Length: 452
Ligand code: CTP
Image (cartoon, rainbow, N blue to C red; front, side):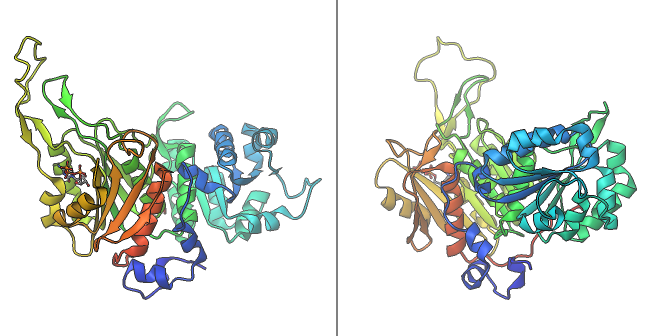
């Protein structure tokens, strides 16, 4: 049974969310106090299947990360898996049960049935070419294969192998078939492989596997939507080494981007030069680096056309040096010789390109009269929502990991007041509140985790 938005006849996301009986969707949109996406895995029941491949060592790190995140973990190693890493490694790292065979059984019940029913999600990492081929044929020859046949939980396959094996039409067709049957496939990364060749076939980073599993577990309120986020300060060059900027770290923007991706959106994030990247790649998650406010404007102009939800969390510099000097300006110039000129207001400039039905969310950083000035910006910039936060003092949003924010809708009504909160949970909660209040037209899910 799929509890997705596709099953309803509602015209808007808000209508769907109001009418839905989908427990998991409501759970997804409930407020959280998690400090990282991984904390959202707490108490999720995960069955990890490790098959025979050199990337099995990365599965140990993955298992450890899952346990650290608070997930409940059970592990199955195939016979091939045990050639690369031992059951003891997983027992020691996870403290959870590890099984290898249907026949060798001092313990418990019939794992392939009980574990299949227990799991919220099954992750196969690494998934070897041989294992993928067996799944495609529906084999039940081992504990792992039988468990997969018996489960109704979502299954995430993370292939890892030599490039030629990965690109072989047999493997490609097997993955395609599994994808058509509803298995989720996380494409392998490219890079240097253990066999010495360079190409596609690397197991994605454990963080990418964890976040993809989460995206599958949340019932994707934003599936089918394109979200564009801007994050962080811009940099306005004066000469080749000096610049004007501000203290925005971009953390709120990047958390918002990741949260919208976790909620199912295809996400693009345009980031100032000092904003930290995600550090791993995810399907349908693209990062763009810009330097100045003018660069930000031109990058946003290219991306805005298809955007359903714009979150303008960047702190673009409002001024830039009138002239950009090449080389280093010497210190003997007159002290007041830095002349400034105004930068364009990006939200106002882009407004003519706003897609019908799209939602635009802006931020307002204020040092006084938060509500009053925020409301003025809401109207002036023709926004659907505005997020108010403090530019200085104890509640300042700038730089740190926590914030305190208030969200107003287009009518100026307060729909969320975070209180002091970690920026990750503030991002998740504000997005959830906006989705509950908004009237985004309904979309059909893009199948980006599926094999193309
Ligand atoms: N913004 C923008 N273009 C700019 C400056 C800001 O689109 N050149 C956006 C920000 O990303 C934010 C909103 O406008 O979503 C409000 O930004 P803020 O810095 O609070 O206000 P400003 O418009 O710059 O006005 P002021 O600095 O006078 O408060």
